[in-house]
Length: 91
Length: 189
Image (cartoon, rainbow over all chains, first blue to last red; front, side, top):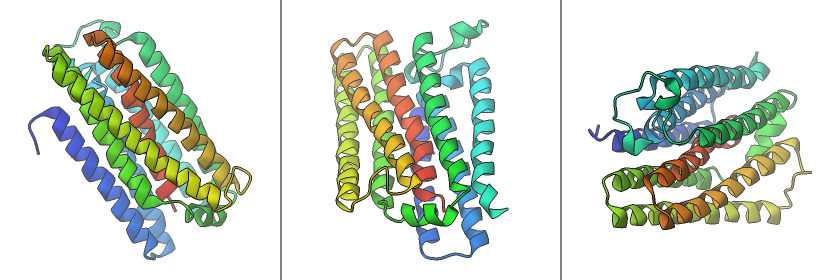
């Protein structure tokens, strides 16, 4: 990984974006219902990681521990809400 | 913001906050609006998951995936512009902002093509609840990208370090919204 924090964040974001798209393509090629739901959960987890990277590296919250903690807790709770809503039809 | 991220944190939380407090109020407000929209989308999806999946098949996932890379890269260039300005390199700052705005324009062109293709196929907000949310959320985001490009142009013109921090924060918010919006609308099955 690059040493520059911005370049590192951008590289990680690109890898996560490609990962999400690759999973979606795999989903398109036909998977069982359980695998489909699991893939969706992974895609949501990857988007949570992408959002954290943008907040910390691009928006500079890495240098503001108080605000970073607040945003991370809120974002994690929101990601859990989306995950719960996504999984609801499968339960 | 990202250009000044490696300073020692202040003890006062308000002083820790990068950029301008009012910009953060705006960012949080926008995140709440989009966040509520996406939560509502997934709530309505519970009533008809098969219909939502069938509707989603009309979208261009590859185009949206390309647009994600485009927007994330644009955000990276905007963050580099703040760093360049903090280092006193105004020419490089303007070049990076222009490149960020250009990528923003590429995003709009691809999204515009997606919209025109959907309209040509007879899709509208009335077609299915999926498309009501799709057009409202991506249309609202589209408007934010337009506003963001105007802001990037303005801060390239009036390029004080403070203006750059505040203006690029808006652009990163647009980026942040898209990385959550894209998988929920285009990828979740």
